[in-house]
Length: 147
Ligand code: DQA
Image (cartoon, rainbow, N blue to C red; front, side, top):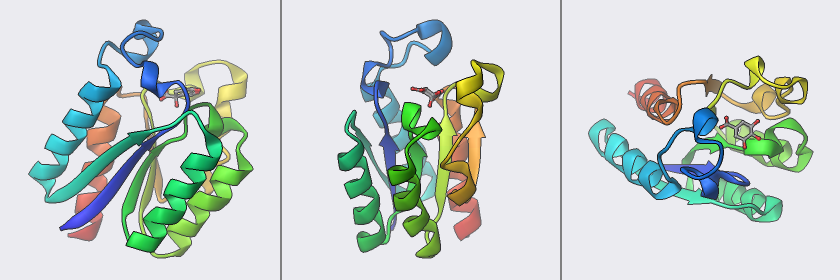
Protein backbone atom coordinates (compact mmCIF):
# COMPACT_ATOMS: atom_id res chain seq x y z
CA UNK A 1 0.00 0.00 0.00
CA UNK A 2 1.17 3.52 -0.74
CA UNK A 3 2.06 5.34 2.43
CA UNK A 4 1.22 9.01 3.06
CA UNK A 5 2.25 11.10 6.07
CA UNK A 6 -0.06 14.01 6.88
CA UNK A 7 2.05 16.47 8.86
CA UNK A 8 0.46 19.40 10.67
CA UNK A 9 2.45 22.27 12.14
CA UNK A 10 2.14 24.58 15.12
CA UNK A 11 -1.20 25.37 16.72
CA UNK A 12 -3.08 22.84 14.57
CA UNK A 13 -3.39 20.67 17.69
CA UNK A 14 -5.83 23.39 18.82
CA UNK A 15 -8.24 22.79 15.93
CA UNK A 16 -11.84 22.98 17.06
CA UNK A 17 -10.95 25.55 19.75
CA UNK A 18 -8.74 27.98 17.80
CA UNK A 19 -10.65 30.56 15.71
CA UNK A 20 -13.35 28.12 14.54
CA UNK A 21 -14.69 30.80 12.19
CA UNK A 22 -11.38 30.54 10.29
CA UNK A 23 -10.30 26.93 10.85
CA UNK A 24 -13.65 25.14 11.42
CA UNK A 25 -15.02 23.07 14.28
CA UNK A 26 -13.30 19.72 13.61
CA UNK A 27 -10.62 18.79 16.14
CA UNK A 28 -7.21 17.44 15.15
CA UNK A 29 -8.38 13.95 16.15
CA UNK A 30 -11.42 14.38 13.86
CA UNK A 31 -9.10 15.45 11.03
CA UNK A 32 -6.80 12.46 11.60
CA UNK A 33 -9.78 10.08 11.46
CA UNK A 34 -11.10 11.72 8.28
CA UNK A 35 -7.68 11.51 6.60
CA UNK A 36 -7.37 7.81 7.44
CA UNK A 37 -10.87 7.14 6.07
CA UNK A 38 -10.30 9.18 2.88
CA UNK A 39 -6.97 7.45 2.42
CA UNK A 40 -8.55 4.00 2.77
CA UNK A 41 -11.08 4.89 0.05
CA UNK A 42 -8.20 5.97 -2.21
CA UNK A 43 -5.98 2.96 -1.48
CA UNK A 44 -3.54 4.95 0.65
CA UNK A 45 -2.27 4.20 4.15
CA UNK A 46 -2.43 7.55 5.91
CA UNK A 47 -0.83 8.50 9.20
CA UNK A 48 -1.48 11.98 10.63
CA UNK A 49 0.88 13.75 13.02
CA UNK A 50 1.00 17.22 14.56
CA UNK A 51 3.84 19.15 16.19
CA UNK A 52 4.52 22.66 17.41
CA UNK A 53 8.23 21.92 17.10
CA UNK A 54 10.15 22.84 13.94
CA UNK A 55 12.93 20.31 14.49
CA UNK A 56 10.44 17.49 15.01
CA UNK A 57 8.73 18.38 11.72
CA UNK A 58 12.09 18.48 9.92
CA UNK A 59 12.80 15.01 11.32
CA UNK A 60 9.44 13.71 10.08
CA UNK A 61 10.20 15.00 6.57
CA UNK A 62 13.57 13.21 6.64
CA UNK A 63 11.72 10.08 7.77
CA UNK A 64 9.27 10.40 4.87
CA UNK A 65 12.23 10.31 2.46
CA UNK A 66 13.78 7.32 4.23
CA UNK A 67 10.57 5.23 4.32
CA UNK A 68 9.42 6.42 0.85
CA UNK A 69 6.19 8.03 2.10
CA UNK A 70 4.44 10.82 0.21
CA UNK A 71 3.53 13.89 2.28
CA UNK A 72 0.57 16.17 2.84
CA UNK A 73 2.04 19.12 4.74
CA UNK A 74 0.23 21.90 6.53
CA UNK A 75 3.23 23.88 7.79
CA UNK A 76 0.89 26.36 9.56
CA UNK A 77 2.85 29.50 10.58
CA UNK A 78 6.13 27.83 9.48
CA UNK A 79 4.75 28.25 5.93
CA UNK A 80 5.68 31.87 6.00
CA UNK A 81 9.26 31.81 7.28
CA UNK A 82 10.81 28.39 7.93
CA UNK A 83 13.68 27.82 5.52
CA UNK A 84 14.56 24.72 7.57
CA UNK A 85 11.18 23.21 6.73
CA UNK A 86 11.53 24.29 3.11
CA UNK A 87 14.91 22.60 2.79
CA UNK A 88 13.50 19.43 4.37
CA UNK A 89 10.41 19.54 2.11
CA UNK A 90 12.69 19.94 -0.92
CA UNK A 91 14.36 16.63 -0.05
CA UNK A 92 10.97 14.92 -0.31
CA UNK A 93 10.21 16.19 -3.81
CA UNK A 94 13.76 15.93 -5.16
CA UNK A 95 13.71 12.40 -3.77
CA UNK A 96 10.93 11.54 -6.22
CA UNK A 97 8.08 11.67 -3.70
CA UNK A 98 4.99 13.87 -3.81
CA UNK A 99 4.49 16.66 -1.29
CA UNK A 100 1.24 18.62 -1.27
CA UNK A 101 1.12 21.82 0.79
CA UNK A 102 -2.33 22.29 2.33
CA UNK A 103 -4.09 25.03 4.25
CA UNK A 104 -7.51 25.03 5.85
CA UNK A 105 -7.95 28.75 5.21
CA UNK A 106 -6.89 30.63 2.09
CA UNK A 107 -3.80 32.55 3.23
CA UNK A 108 -3.92 34.73 0.08
CA UNK A 109 -7.11 36.38 1.36
CA UNK A 110 -5.71 37.07 4.83
CA UNK A 111 -2.99 39.25 6.42
CA UNK A 112 -0.08 40.21 4.14
CA UNK A 113 2.46 38.12 6.07
CA UNK A 114 0.44 35.02 5.15
CA UNK A 115 0.71 35.73 1.41
CA UNK A 116 4.25 34.35 1.27
CA UNK A 117 4.87 30.60 1.36
CA UNK A 118 8.49 29.54 1.50
CA UNK A 119 7.28 25.94 1.06
CA UNK A 120 5.22 26.34 -2.13
CA UNK A 121 8.28 26.59 -4.38
CA UNK A 122 9.41 23.08 -3.46
CA UNK A 123 5.97 21.45 -3.19
CA UNK A 124 4.39 19.31 -5.90
CA UNK A 125 1.28 21.48 -5.52
CA UNK A 126 -0.84 23.43 -3.06
CA UNK A 127 -4.48 23.17 -1.92
CA UNK A 128 -5.85 25.97 0.24
CA UNK A 129 -9.13 27.39 1.42
CA UNK A 130 -11.41 24.37 1.59
CA UNK A 131 -11.26 23.61 5.31
CA UNK A 132 -10.63 19.95 6.09
CA UNK A 133 -11.63 19.20 2.50
CA UNK A 134 -8.22 20.63 1.49
CA UNK A 135 -6.75 17.42 2.91
CA UNK A 136 -9.19 15.18 1.00
CA UNK A 137 -8.33 17.02 -2.21
CA UNK A 138 -4.60 16.66 -1.52
CA UNK A 139 -4.91 12.92 -0.85
CA UNK A 140 -7.02 12.52 -3.98
CA UNK A 141 -4.38 14.40 -6.02
CA UNK A 142 -1.69 12.06 -4.72
CA UNK A 143 -3.75 8.95 -5.53
CA UNK A 144 -4.53 10.27 -9.02
CA UNK A 145 -0.90 11.20 -9.74
CA UNK A 146 0.27 7.73 -8.70
CA UNK A 147 -2.45 5.82 -10.61
C1 DQA B 1 -2.84 27.70 8.09
C2 DQA B 1 -2.62 29.14 7.62
C3 DQA B 1 -1.41 29.75 8.31
O1 DQA B 1 -1.25 31.10 7.90
C4 DQA B 1 -1.60 29.74 9.81
O2 DQA B 1 -0.44 30.22 10.46
C5 DQA B 1 -2.02 28.42 10.35
C6 DQA B 1 -2.94 27.59 9.59
C7 DQA B 1 -4.13 27.09 7.48
O3 DQA B 1 -4.26 25.87 7.52
O4 DQA B 1 -5.01 27.84 7.05
O5 DQA B 1 -1.68 28.05 11.49
O6 DQA B 1 -1.74 26.92 7.61
